[in-house]
Image 1 (cartoon, rainbow, N blue to C red):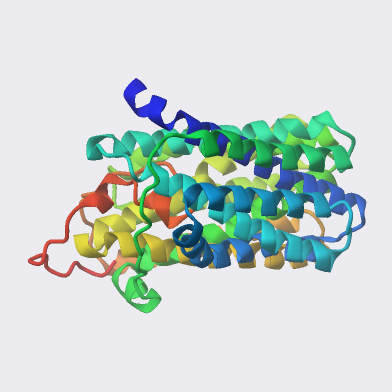
Image 2: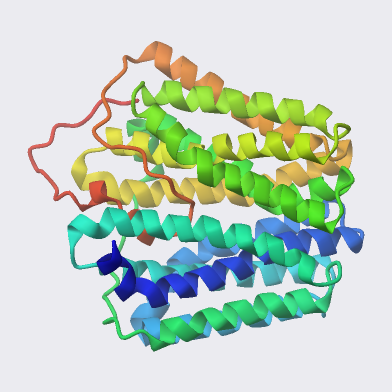
Length: 418
């Protein structure tokens, strides 16, 4: 493992600083927006701007890297992100924040694309899986640490926005100093969404529903915690508990799904997550620790849905379509993540904070019902691809999966529709 880590230490240090800053920013905006009187509808629309920008950035970032190179792109996007962050406390209104969130999403996807394309240049294919695992561990750990930084300044104050900008700028220092050769950026084709759904409907819908749920959590989770009575420290601990649940439970849950029909595993995870979300409707009056415990469990389940959908798609697609299928599945998840905060924010404005866990329960129960219906219509199958813990970043991260390195086999028969 040492020979994997040392050459990539600069990249991993950069991404850790970057994610600590961006993790703090999402929670900070929800806290500051609540103090400014933004209701759930307004804050949901503002937060959806980030995912819209992230979606646009997946198309712009590769073109920018090809034009000016990896290091300059990273420096450019880090500067753009820092400027956007520092403008938030200057222009405190919803339209401006929405535009700034779009810019932040575009900038961050550019930063992630630089890092992940460099990680994909790992010359030893046997080590790519370890690189992927290490990268995802750094992702989750840095996001959790970012939540702790919320307690360093006054509620929603300028100092915290400055801290986010400092962390983003600091992330450029190790990356721009790296001596790793700059890799090329290959075109990552996307499998048509209709074809993807026709071949892997369960995986496609699961990725979209995962986006609806997780986009709403990242955008409105801090607002929910504040509205049920948590102070700033409680909000950060609420987010940490959910993230830690996703970090610690994702792998064992996913490995269990390798032993049964993947749709059964997905359906069970969705049903448990929906049940936990319904319990959270009652937990607001139980004190902090029951809420932390419930959302720890919810995070473990909800964070598992997207990587399980990727694993199911890898089980289903022919080898020559794996990488393009991964890219398209990420697109579906991103669309859901852009819509989720807006939908859940509207519900919270009309019905109060309890609407957020109720929303989680509704969308996840609907997915479970769909999966069980698919299971009743189709027989089970073995899993040629194992589960991998992951977060949604860019198509570059999915290229690190060992399964997507398989060369196309022209004799591969079409696989069954699941």
